[in-house]
Length: 400
Ligand code: FAD
Image (tube, rainbow, N blue to C red):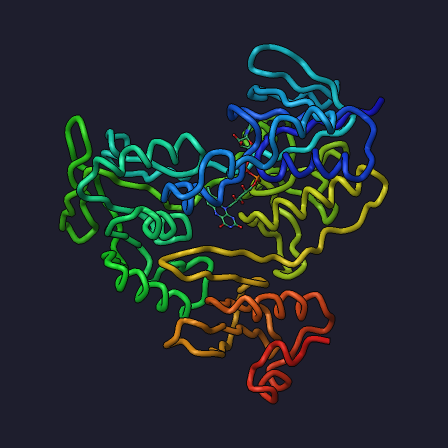
């Protein structure tokens, strides 16, 4: 009987195991993860779960019964090493497990803030359920909350913390790495209107305190009072295991268009994988549920006899200060943008073009535009500027 071992029981690891069974794989499926309990989804950790409007059971990807029913073995352990020659993995408790195929789905970990005082009590991050529980408990006690980093996680935390916070961002705009300037500006306004203080172009040079963090020192020398500091400065892919096993690693575990690593028996998926992205036209690592789920499905298909290059359209969503932002496509090297809809009413989309071809659509409270964009991006060729201009940038008018 063939065995597929999945290392990492997060969004992509869970999906790989579930999709193998959905596709009729009748070998052994083992899902090894180092977080306690059944696999859970992370998005609510910075949204409804943080706000206290969703409970633990709403995080779980499936209940315990599912794993028994589908004969998916859940192993609660950290994988210490991969022995590629013997096709075995070693767990931290010195157990060994043999595989025919291995799926590396180890995700990412939060990037540390390399400044003095970053290890003071009261300085927290948000990646796991444990982190979210700790933050929820700390929020009820804290008087001055500072978020370091104006990316998705920092801004979602600010939006769902239930009180005004200060967001410090080193770049000159929020969401700098992932959104157009129009969207950055809109969300800066929105967060300020919601009562948050947004400081742009300000790095953090130190955190000060004693038995507790007390102040955040900014790059201009000024200090902010703080008894809770949330560090949200991005993630780094969890690649140590792959690297120690001699797999190619460069900003993630390097995979080919079939998501295979440099060892043909081993795949890598999700936040930890650096893959040739069709839409970006370059090697890319994405951090999203869509990417985790679609890559898992692609590998499950390959392992059940339907191997096709990975080409799914990247899309993403985030909920912040009452607005839902949905992004379809990849915003790399856009040279022209158009705002369609009613920005004042908070219902609009930013269409981004490169060489007159539509490459990304960011929709704020315009779900129909997002759905239309996803359909248009799966059609070939992509819409051109002139075609869209003729319809006054109504994406729905172009759906076949
Ligand atoms: P993960 O879900 O991180 O799973 C990896 C697992 O592997 C972890 O459990 C880890 O502990 C385990 N692991 C690592 N090394 C080992 C080892 N050696 N042995 C055993 N286990 C190991 N995406 C969206 O699209 N929309 C959102 O709104 C959104 N919100 C988010 C909010 C938060 C707070 C966070 C943290 C992420 C959010 N994301 C969102 C991103 C999304 O959750 C991730 O892209 C997704 O979880 C990636 O799945 P993954 O399986 O690659 O990694």
